[in-house]
Length: 395
Image (cartoon, rainbow, N blue to C red; front, side):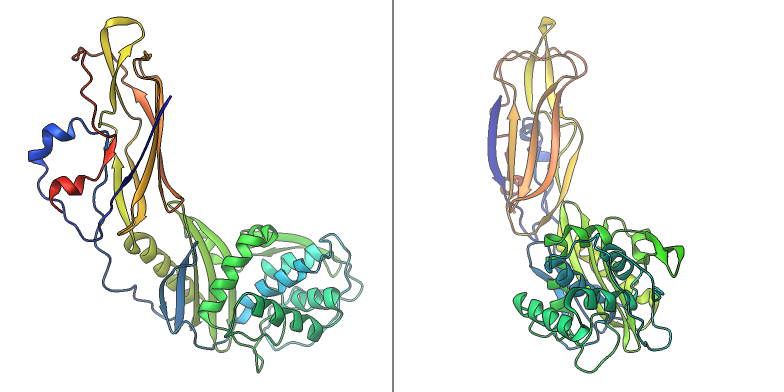
């Protein structure tokens, strides 16, 4: 097998000229990189959020507005509660005590009663999936002995993560003096939680969780309605208090994971609508759609294994495209069978992969044509497999 490696330049605003003069050249080229559309000038229009931020998996802030303003984070708090509990070393199958407390009217409660014997897993799942405030308090008490001691650990963890505009006053997120955060800090927290805590990553993608509460088997549905409508969503936590509704979200498409937070929304649906708008903008506008290979573009002419007179043409099995950051090179790697090696009709001949900054962008299998062709015996495919077509265009 032979490997080839190169880089393809992706200019940010170039527009292709007519390709007609290049027809004879393009017939010899394996795959071309077409320039992406120019970066959108206008950011997404959000309907309700007062502050928000969207960040990529590498920690790059793609867009934000008032992202360091102190605001109520509501039940997004429970992500920090889960991290601190997992850091404690307590086993998820440990049996826990429950403590009946007092809560504001309409507070979301799991409904634990004295005599219940939930596991720490039960408390954590009803806290993260259903957003039970009593579950959050019980997690705190069972882990640290009291909510005050647990909150101290929460603030210590926030400082370790660099959340300088955050202060916790309780483990559940109900409104309280001194309990606040900002969109940027919460995005940082969400990204860290999904990367370092597999339990949290699984829990926030769970549609419902069942356990015995007050002597009865009950099922608790997720408060994250966006999971049902947004493709690629990875969670992670809703919130709602008198000051506004909130959503800390994550999604993965095109090999890229995004993290976002909207604060200060006014309605239940508004937090989801604004999150979807932020993510759509990042995928569709901040990242450029590029065409990397067409299924009709030839890679090589090779010998046919069952006939000396016939040749096969190797092409990508499918057309390939991907989402790439504008102005940054895309690297590719191609592995082909040895020079002069014969091929069966339709047989696999190699593969190509494209990456950008270590992130996978696309993958293509290379196959021989389904029927033999009479083509010249010389090898016309001596150009590099991939090159920057915009240089030929004079971009």
